[in-house]
Image 1: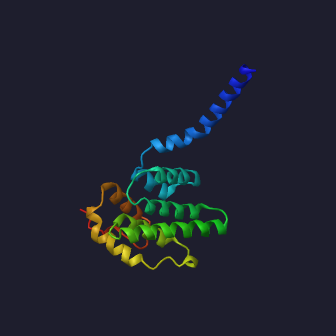
Image 2: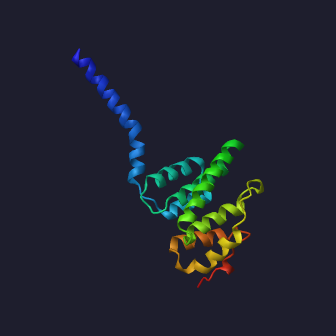
Image 3: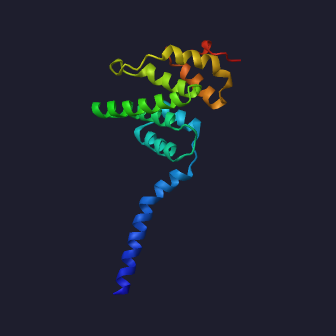
Length: 169
């Protein structure tokens, strides 16, 4: 009788380990802005979900801005209109809250600008484009090289923000 319980317990252990392992890997990875911006630019649903899990598990300061941007990216990739709208609204609340907490965060102004520029007119999320553009232009030089690179990459396809607007040397 004892021998039949041991394999059963082992099976349960391995099943739990199998389901726990992906989450433990996410917790061990570190948030990297270069990877974040790559996913924001070209990410698919699965990579957005993984990055969202990574951001949620990280201890970075004011991470709700990154979460909000990822949710809005996920909204762009969702198939059903209701799901798109729900994700967009959730992401909008998070990124706006992050900007209320830290309005001097130029990176979040950049993320909001990228979303505003591509948001459908029906969601009426275009009101801060000029404000965000001005903040990015004025503070571009103080940003980290990774964020500067992301902004310069974005300028290539943007109708609002151009490399000439930035004080690039």
